[in-house]
Image (cartoon, rainbow, N blue to C red):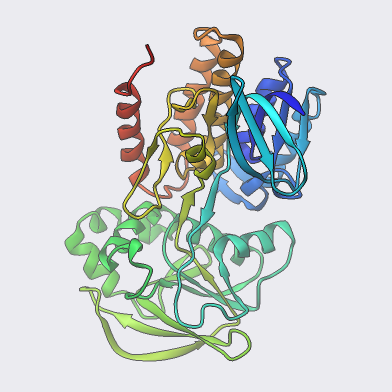
Length: 405
């Protein structure tokens, strides 16, 4: 099988790129391991500055537009297990079915994966990631349980808490993860409290008014440690910033969670207590899935934790591997509108690679670059402030990369 462009991933970035390539007559194959295209769009639902953002509707719109182009083909329930440079292009090997595809250009839009938080008894039925709960509620219309708890802070935890409460699910709140053990990448308790500054605008009006106060670490620690044990109202549930989960309870399934108070120094104090829940959502954040990009030999930017490993990329998603492009959360964790703009920009890179003209479509590149800036400005959630610094370092690395010839 042969195609001009191969897109790996049918999420917002991959579908947006496919539309741009499709309307320019490029023979394009989009491959995704999921049975339904749309990626994380399918489970997203939140209120933005311009109204409700309903990811499923956005995905349906992208697919309707994609269906206008007979030169774009979807191959679902198929994953790519390898990419090999061959004959000036790339050969992709499929793992779910026999055969390969030869492509002149490849766009990697493999997105991100969740990072769970291990704690005692976390393998009990009823323990899941926040993304799994989001998919159950928003995609399949199934409540994950009657009463749950979210363990771990971060933008995704608050977004899913809002979605679950709107679906009628009772939550015992959002609590800290265990303070010891294998979840140390989350940082200290103080580090986790600092991340709450990015979501304070989602709280009640009186909490938003306290934003200047918590801008200081001195007052942030005292406000968080001094919060009522039952929590602070937020998104239909409660934030419990000075309560940590220390273990799940249950025999054959989750029956509760063991909690303990935390002081402003991040030390467990007092006696643990049991709180009844029948499900728990673990929120350890998201990390890119850059494995295929690394397999092509593209230069990578690595991190100590492995949670911020991404390919080094240029203005239109080009990597240092010839004919390999990347877009979306594989480049860093941001929202779907950002991923869509990145997909459009990467399509310009693919078009230039196929045509051999590095200056064509300059007006389109400028428009898509502006759309990317606007999407970042309007983003309701900041998933990880580290990404802005990482992207600046990548821009410098791209500028200083060794040039061919």
